[in-house]
Image (cartoon, rainbow, N blue to C red; front, side, top):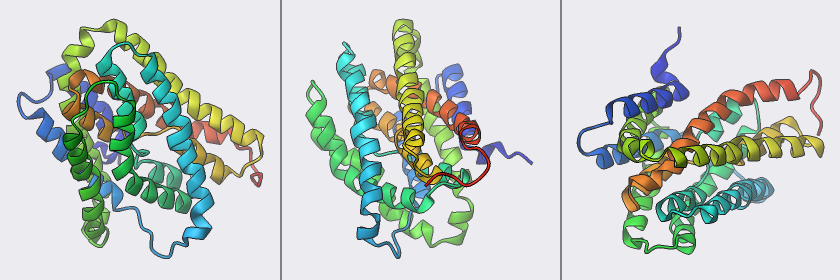
Amino acid sequence: MFRPWRSFPTMVASGLVVGFATGGFPAYSKEISQLALAVGMMFSLSEITLEGISPRAELRGFLVSFAMTYVLLSGVILAFAYASEEAAIRDGWVLMAAVPPAVAVVPITAYLKGDTRRALVSLAILYLLGLVLVPLVTVAFTTQAVPISELVLQTVLLVGLPLVASRGIAQWPRGRESRSTVVSVSFFFLVTAIAGSTRGPLLARPDVLGILSLLALLRTFGVGGLVLLVSRAVGTSRETRLSLTAFASFKNLGLTVVLAFAVFGPTATLPSIVSLVFEILWLAALPLLFRASDPPGPAPV
């Protein structure tokens, strides 16, 4: 039986609809979004473990994942930032470039039978690096004054504390069992709060919605599809191809939205809100693409 509260895409899509239809929460939208993201991150990151990992054996896989996330994908996003004339929109793109990949790359990789171990190791290291990279990249590429103390505080609260708390949840059987439900419901409240807060700026700027949709399409389907085609052309294994595509496609947009909302204001969240829609569509498309692109028989090595 289908349980919508356990489906991440369903709850995110529902949050978008409810937020835009109702205007979200009448008060404390910032605090609700921060709390919802922190809870969702704690349970999402509980899936990550580094037990029994050999750094030397995993180094190459991590470096490739880092290149997909912070060189290729972040590079494309920064190009969008520099092409944006409005400061708030530009800073929203910069924050998106600064954050680590979406935690969803792990369940996506596991569901499609990819290299889950590689995804787990790479993601764990990228989140540790994110404590430094998020404020560093943001300060380096934004053109307006950045409240550094607020940015560092938000990074610690929304990345550092959930990382620490997730270790306890990972040891709690009920926590593991309820992971998908808690993450999905948390993101429903997060997206409802942010979508409601950005409804006014978004509806007032239909011109911005059009260009943001085009850039989000290129950022997600364009970059992810290109990596998928190139990796297949050079003969990588299906498992590696899936991992590369996931790291080149997904950013932690929940974290981006909350950081943008807290540091730069509602308008800065628009790139992430629009991109979230296209990431959901890309998430739905990946099983079809990998089924179509991988004929029966052994995958190439």
